[in-house]
Image (cartoon, rainbow, N blue to C red; front, side, top):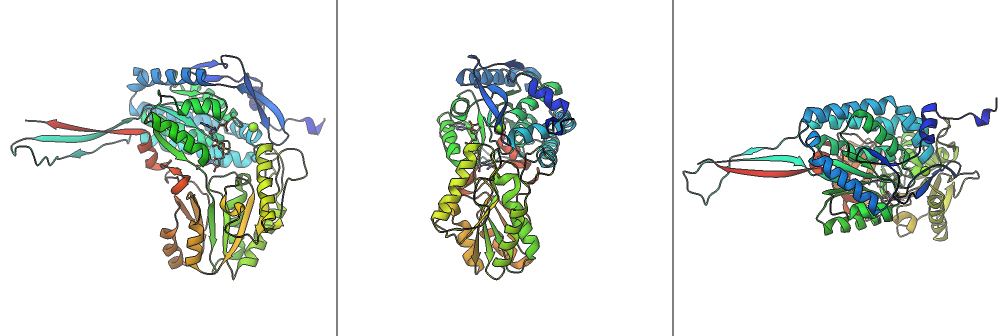
Length: 502
Ligand code: NAP
Ligand code: MG
């Protein structure tokens, strides 16, 4: 037995990797029209593990047309809300049954630890599908007694509002939570009766293609969900600018989000944008030092720091600064790096060599500007795209490492002396996605919460996402709220009806 050559993944995953990868358009599996493909890389080894279609405007156009036909077709347009609920519950069961396999695909493609992928990514998908299945039968408008002061007094009127699906949705998603981001878009779209064209990230297209197979198995009518792989500047840009979509749902960087938003506005396409962040972690002086250190480490190092709401700026009260920062550095220096499929791995590789280089350049820029590396500081000495978990101190608020989103395992830790100061510095960023406050001082916490400009404020935890809790950004972190009831509003149009009964 050659231990090293034993596959670390199941026969199901091996079979999936062996199948040829095609776009899922109108219920058919189609290659790019010119046959071109993009290599999919395992970031733990740098090796190509699959090839997917390199699609462009022709494939996007085909998919948007298929989604439009499916939206108009009675089998979907007239489907009862209870049928949409049933299908979502069926899809949830299929995702759950194939959970291990999906987690393996995610670990291979993205690099994240497989157990985490199973518990968090797949777990959130299963519960998210079930949560949104519940909404399918609970979409409602309101009835009103209209005032109409300019009409004769004897008139009788009645008014109501109703919600209808927004239509064809173009969904463009990033590589950090590939399956989960797909579900965040697809689940509310299917709950409300929309149809979808999904463009996954070029770096992580595999779980979306496996999901498309499960959607087919669940029995959705052809064209209700379409998956088209390709580059952002090509397939993504064609989707965002397509006049045939009614809404674009985008998650990714603020820079690309603005481009997508401009393209959408030209067609008055509805849009929701979930963008970047530089989220503060605020540790008040009364904390339990070891709990705060563990929490702060998890806030930045979870998913290799590739989290939109990662706690990348750590503000610690000066009285506990040394002890908390030392605790975080200790945790960082002891993390076990390895491939996502190795169950002992705590920190996987970054998504790509390009991303690892970008993160390392940020660390270098910090050091050039005067920051001190407490632990980590660059690429880990092993094949694949690994960066050592890094803690920087002696930073100033104007440094690029403090101001810009790094999207990797790099933390800047800074002392503060009072709450007014930390509120101002925490908000001194163009972003506003998340923030956390670590303290047991109820009064201090409640007084600080409304002063923080962020879509989510966590207390004594960080980046915990719940399907019922709206998620999204203030300021340049985006427009709109996903999850919860808020997501239903994003995928519906409201129609007002006024009836003259006289
Ligand atoms: P990205 O470059 O903005 O990519 C996001 C998606 O947009 C990908 O599918 C990408 O295609 C596509 N894209 C690229 N250029 C495009 C264009 N001109 N038109 C239309 N689509 C285009 O971001 P990323 O590098 O994948 O992810 C990292 C960033 O996303 C970080 O800044 C992070 O903060 C943010 N993010 C935010 C959230 C949130 O919920 N707020 C969640 C996750 C990530 P490719 O596959 O070719 O790149
Ligand atoms: Mg990959």
